[in-house]
Image (cartoon, rainbow, N blue to C red; front, side, top):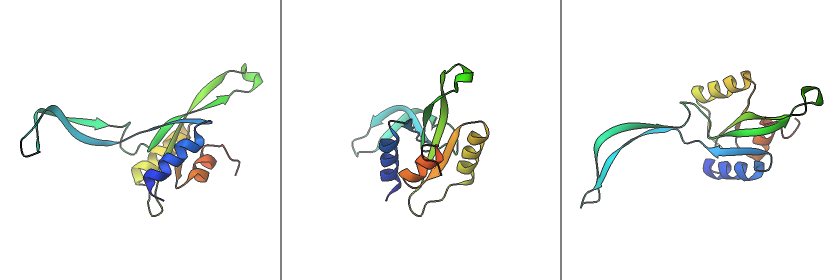
Length: 128
C-alpha cells in the first residue's frame, strides 16, 4: 500500500476517536507569479515559504480528546497526536524519530505507522 493511501485510510479509520490533519512539510518559492507563453512560471519578488510545523514533524497531526478521572474534576482535554506514515519499504528519518520521541516525552501521543492497526496501537486506541 502506498504511503498516500495509508495516510488516507488512517485518517478515515481514526476519525471518530482522533482528529488528524495532513501536515505537509517542505520549502517552496512564493511571490508575484506570472505565467509565460511557453508555460513556464516567473516569480517576481521571490521569498522562501517554509511549510509544516518543523523539519521531522509527522505526516498527520492533531489531537485525541481524553477524559480526566473524576478526581481531576471530570474535565476533558486534548492530547497532541502525531502519526508518521510510511509505505511498506519506508523508514523514518532521524528527525522524524526525534519528533515522535520528544512528543511522547512531553506527554503527547506519537507513532510511526504503516497501517491503521499500527496507528491505533500507537495512539492508545487498541491496548497492546
